[in-house]
Every structure is written in structure tokens, then in C-alpha cells.
Length: 242
Image (cartoon, rainbow, N blue to C red):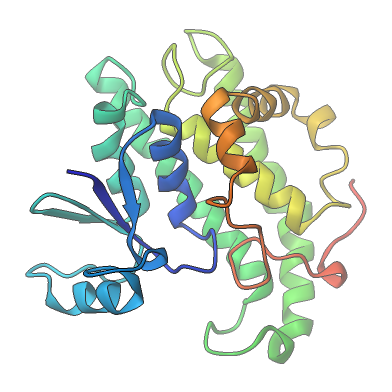
């Protein structure tokens, strides 16, 4: 049976971290809310949110047969071994999960650059606070996260081509997605990113050119970044690198 991915149909959002893993593995999956027909579409997703015995708090969530999983790091920890995208050694799978959880922290901070006060307010209602939050993120928080992952790549005992282990994992794919999103959201601030963090820059290029990822990025399945998702480009929140 195909995996069923449930996520909002008009944005990449957090669901994209799961899509990238499924696409890289060539897995059979259905993007439920973006599909039509019986048991598909937004009504099916909203019904599942209310009717599952252990209902997810919010999308994304994944159904594999009778099993329903939610939270991105949790889903990827489950899918990783099945898709060949997890370290072979079991102890390193917990390391991968911790790294993915750190990426979750980064994604939350990116979101808060444009919605620092309340998710129920429009961006325009908190623009001044967003400018302050985005400036702090770009000057202090982004270098801290990027520096950490750069160091983790370089210190990997198996080599600096992957974040954990000696082969591609879902963590590599998720870091790629973060770097892509940051380039979209903050093009001025990210101009010198590859020079400042060469291992992360090289990882981005390697992932982008993997055959299945390259094909996915060119396909209609890859929803463009937009100002409804996590990575949003508001010129007034961007600033020159350094």
C-alpha cells in the first residue's frame, strides 16, 4: 500500500521534509489533500484529524496501513530505515533523530521571523516586531545554527559528505530544504552563506543534483516557496550579509 501523506495543499511547509524523503527513495505515496477522488482532498484530511483514535494535533501526519504518525522528526525516524535514509548503526539513528529535532527548532525560529507575536495575526499587524525578530535571527541565531551544522558535518567520523553516518540520510535532505528556504526568504543575508559555511554549501549542491531530487524539483509536485509557508520573502526583513 502507498504511504498517505496529509498536509496543507498550497504550501511546502513542514510537509516538505517528508516529501523529500519519499521522493528521494522513489517511494509510492499519495499526497492526500492535494489529490482528488474518494478518500482524498481537504475533507479527507480534516476528517482524519478528527476521527483517528489517536488523532494528530496538526498536519503533517503519515498513514502507513493502520499506523498513523505525526511530528516531522518522528515520521522521519520511522520512515528512514524503511526508505534506506537512516544510518545503518542503530545508535546513530538516535543521533539522526536529535539532529532532525534541532532542525525543527531552526524551522520554528524561521517562522517566528515573520510571526513573532501571534500566529492569529496577519504579518502586516506585527511588521515592526518582525523586523526586530528577523534582524536578531540573521545576526545571531542563524550563524549559531549554521555553525553547529557546519561543525557537525566536518566532524563526522565517516566523512564530511553527510551529517551523520556514511551515506545519505533524511537529515541531509532536511538541511538542504532549510538552506533552500533561507535563500528564498533572505537572499541578501544569504549571499555569503556558501563561503562562510562551505561544507553546508557543498551538501546543498550534492542533494540538489541527486537524480530523483533534481527531477522532483523540476516537477509540478514541488510547490514553489510562497508567502503562506514557513520560508517567506519580505524584503523589509532581509539585510546585507555580515
